[in-house]
Structures are given as structure tokens and as C-alpha cells.
Length: 490
Image (cartoon, rainbow, N blue to C red; front, side, top):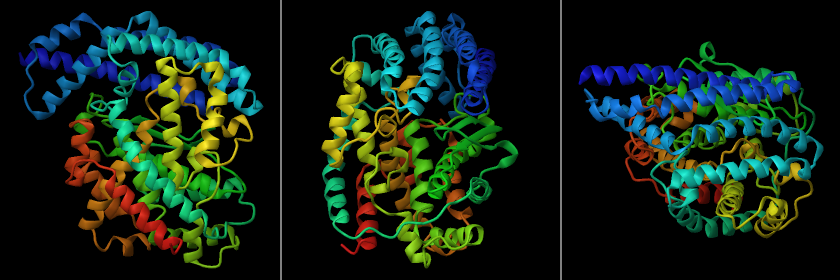
């Protein structure tokens, strides 16, 4: 029996290694791949996806699962995750998986070109293909159940769309009311001037190291849409720069370092196994968001960052650390989810959640997406989308088939609220360290209590184990209320 288990784990290591190679192809496509290589890359991605899918759905895996006996808790978790992957893989025909890999690889390039040209019409035909294939996949996975639930399970297993909707419905009134109060107050002064790309990248690499990113096993590059890629010994991040807005670069970097630190912090015992990556995208987002917001945008850390920016850029229109803290946390109208302040960010996610859920249900057609997006945005935010790159073309996710992914961003904020509450209780003197640019206690607490365990537990149990309470939106809402009530003297 033990040999059966060992054989299955050895087979799974090779499958995981191939998945890492596929991920590296994706990283290459987003960073340094020649623009004209996209059609060939689509074929390459389709070929490797066919191999991976074939391994995951192999009858041998099913046979091993029937007889394998795990030696310990980690082994039982390995079997659980391999079975979950196997059950999913056998429901999706290999040809469909291959077509999805090819089309989404091509769609990614077409999305980038359409976004640059502000041309929604150029993107809609390939998006229609992606949506049709994802509906087909969702129907296969759901086996008569809710198609969108099946998609959510790929990113946050154990959670349904109805449960997510209930959380969002509970949060929305409080967020809208607090935002209305804040926007009645004078907006804090913003940073002024131009910030060179070279200087931004120099400081952003320092920030990555400050938050514990191990550059021996990673690198920082630029991409249109910042992301983190890989796990174990090779975890890479990207960021982007804007000469008028250095926060775009710095906080994108801190956010992606949160993802990368999670992957780098997982026990090496789980390397190239199903437990060797983050357990879910919601838990992953809890790390990126707590790094970026509760730590990175807090008054203590921003006082240190202010000094670093003054040393790098000189005078940029902000007189002192308190004014800088207000500038970093400035609530203001905007279109871009990744640039949104903490108060409005979740409203951006809720918009996408509702739209993609309607797309998958067939209640919204791709041809009507831009109008639906613009109407919903105007209703939620009170002003109109000015161009497609600020509207339905701003995110890469739908082009690569990541339906069911968006709600995990807001779930990650909910989880981060729970973790921050426990972190602060356990480390009452944390702010003194953060004010000196020392994040080691905070990042070490997260590594010790959450990151090292990878996929050992379910997403909700992972958060409950670290936070000491079951996940709920109350800690996040209290944190936001306290922070912005104080910042804006409400």
C-alpha cells in the first residue's frame, strides 16, 4: 500500500513540474516574448496543456487513489488534493482543455492590442470564443449543477457563488455609506512631479526585499498587468511604472510580493506536490492585500517610505509623513481596480463578479458586455467610463479564461481583515518596527501561522487556523471604518 502511495506522489511530482514549466511560458509571454511569437506560443501552450491534462486524468491516477494509504496528515492532504484534481480532469475532455489553452493564449495578445488601441470591437470575437469554451467547460464540471459554482471551485474550493453574494451584499451598504461620507470631505494633497522609471524600479526592488522577497529565488520585471508566477524555488513578480504616479509601481510590487512570499514561505517538504502552492486564490489575496494595505499603507510603514522617497526623488509636494500617509490612502474617483483605494476596491470586484456570473449563466451576451459594464459602473460610482482601457478592457482575466477568479480578490480582503486583527493582538509593538522599515515580525508571523502550510488545509480552515476565528467580513469592515473615520475626521 505504501508503495502505491509513493508511486502516486512520484508521478504527481512530474505533473507539478510540467505545470511549473507551463507557468514559466506564461511569464515569458507577459514579459519578454517577441510580439510576433503569439501564434506559436498558443500552440506550445496547447501542447503542454494536453500533456498535463492527460497526466491528471490518467486511469493510473484513479487506480492509485483507490489503493493508496497515506502515512500521515500531509499524506492525507496530498491524496485529497490529487483526487480533487483528478475528479476535475476526468470531467473535461482533453480536446476541450487543449482548445482552451490555445485560444486563451491567443486572446491574451489580442486583449493587450485592443486595450492599447481602445478598440473593444477588436477583442470581442476572441472573447466570445473564450466565453463559449468556458461555458462548455463549466457545464462539464458542474454535471448538472451551477456552472459558475464550478468555476469558483477552481480558485476557492468549498465556497459557492451564493455564499460570496451574501458576503458582498452584507458589505456593500457599509462601503457605500462610508465612501459617501469620505468624499464629502476635502481630498488630501496628492504627490506632484515626475518620477523616473529607473528610480522607481530601484526603490521598488528595495521594497520587495524589505518585505522579505528572496531575490535568490525570484526576480522583478515589468508587465502591462502586474502578476506573480511560480512556486517553490522559482517565484517571479512583475510591476509597472507611471512617471506621474509612483504609488502604482510601489504598491503593485508590495502586493505581488505578498503573493510571492506566500509561495516562497511554503515548507520545502511540499515542493512539487499539490500542497506546494497557495491553497486558494482567496487565501493568496489575503497575503497580497495584508502586505499592501494593513502593513504597507499603515501610518507606521508609510512614515518610513516617506523618508525613502524623499531620499530618492527629493521634494514631491508632500510636507511631512502625516500628509504622506493621507496621500497614500487618498480616496478619489477612479476607474482602475488595481489603483483603487481600500475603501472602493471591493466595489470594483463586486461589479465584475455580477457581470461574469451573468456571462456564464447566459444572461449577458459578450456583444452587450461593454454597455453592461458602463451602465453598472455609472450606477455604482456616479460617473461614466471615459474609454475602454478604463472599462471592460482594463483587466487581463477574462481574456485568459479566469472566470470565477475575481470574487477571490474581495474574499482576500475579508480574510486579510481577520488575519490583521490577530496579527495586531499578537504583536502589540509592531508599529515601532514598521516605522523603522522592519517588516520581519509581521511577515514572519504570516509565514509561521499561514504561509508554511501551503495547501495542507482547506481555504477556510487555513484562515481560521491562523486568525483563531472563522472568516467573516466584520473585522475588515471595522478596520476600514476605524481607519477612514480617523483619516477624514468623520
